[in-house]
Each structure stands twice: as structure tokens, then as C-alpha cells.
Length: 129
Image 1: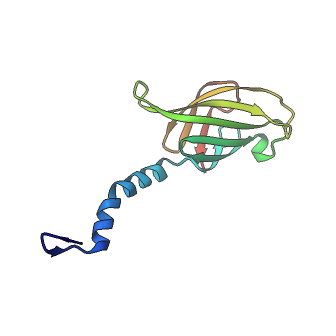
Image 2: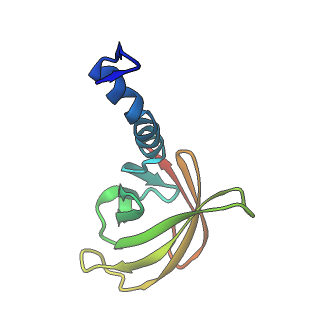
Image 3: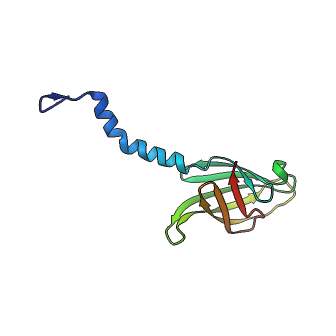
């Protein structure tokens, strides 16, 4: 408890040890994608970012999902060549909608905006609500 006979309060010692942890936690929260996002085609996406995984359920027709409803699972990686976060994963339609498609999807992320790079879904851009 004493260093060179000078008392060091326990709470001070613990707050200094936690500083890197707190900084890393704040960075994770800043990069968190969890929330509701709207596609350029009027679709709604409910995204869960469980670091490092990105999951979503996407619904066409302003959220009704009658034409298509799909799920997605992907992983983000920072691409220094592009200078942005790139999210790659797989998606598949589920029986809520009429469509029965599936495939891979690649997106880039710039803050609260996602942009499709490649993949077989209709939505091209997403904006966090």
C-alpha cells in the first residue's frame, strides 16, 4: 500500500490501471453500429453489433417485409487500401417475404452511413436513424 513510505490511495491506483480499458471501451461504443438504419429503398434494418460480429434483420416496404425479409451476419475489418471499415458477410431471405434469395455482401462504413460494394441485395446505402 505504500511506495517509498508515501501513502497511495487505493482508488487512485485502480483508476490509473483502468485508463487503457476505459479508452478501449469508449472506442468500441463509438464504433458500435447497433440500432435502426434506413435503406435508400425505404427498407428498415435492425442491426446488432456484437463486437466483432454484425447481425441484422432487414425488412422491405418501410419495414413490413412483405416483398423480402433477410438476415445478415458479417465481420468488419479496417481496409487501409480503401481507408474505411469494410464489412463482409452472408445474407439470406427468410419466409416472412416472398423472395427466397441468398448470397454474400460487402459494405463500407463511413460513420453513420453504409454503402454496398457488392452483393445481391437491392439496398445500396444505409443511414442510421
